[in-house]
Length: 141
Length: 124
Image 1 (cartoon, rainbow over the protein chains, first blue to last red):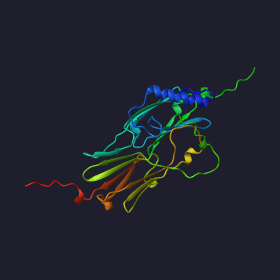
Image 2: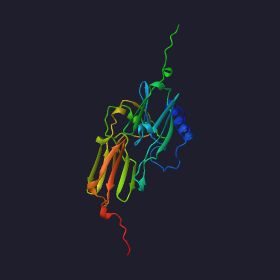
Image 3: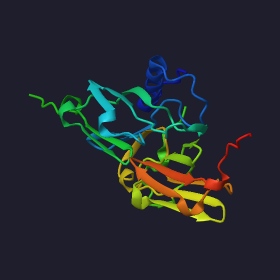
Image 4: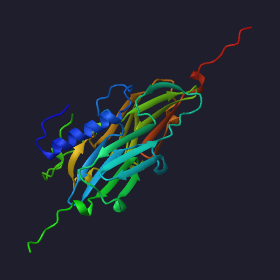
């Protein structure tokens, strides 16, 4: 599991996977072609922000909890899967109701300026880089 | 372990979005069949349900434009349109099929033709 830490990106990936392994995912879910943990996330970056998106179809705002501390982002939630009464199951492929994931971000974030938006089942979180993480120029006296 | 998705960095070339099959739950009662498809990112105007002969085709289109301005750092899922096809049995009443979309979940209700429902035959 531990690859060469050649670049910052490699380190980030390995740490990401280590955190997910320790916190555990539902080991008994059937094997999927996609990533094991739910929900799947994508992480993007521009100059000042990290943007994390997650596919959470069927979730409403109140079903999701987002917690941030230093550079750890914790996502948890539960959705209602309401099937008609007396229904029998033919096939179930969708992810089950409950999830809890912790994601390590590449740098600390400005917690007060975090924006999160849930639209049509896609959760998008914009996390601005903390001021203390930005490079500061030091003048020589 | 997936490697960084460097394809999303800007090249100036627009490629057509790939199509993916959404995870689907199929559940039934005596009166109808219910399909639930997870299509995050779609709302009513992005979904099309088409019925031709006995094939039901559900498509959902997704806007990937807003991701193109950012650099991808870590990618667990790809963004693309959705497509799923079903072959309907003759017990479905095709005129009464209904579909709705809510929070990225497409629900399709396929009522069964009443005469074809199972009947209990009383024994004298």
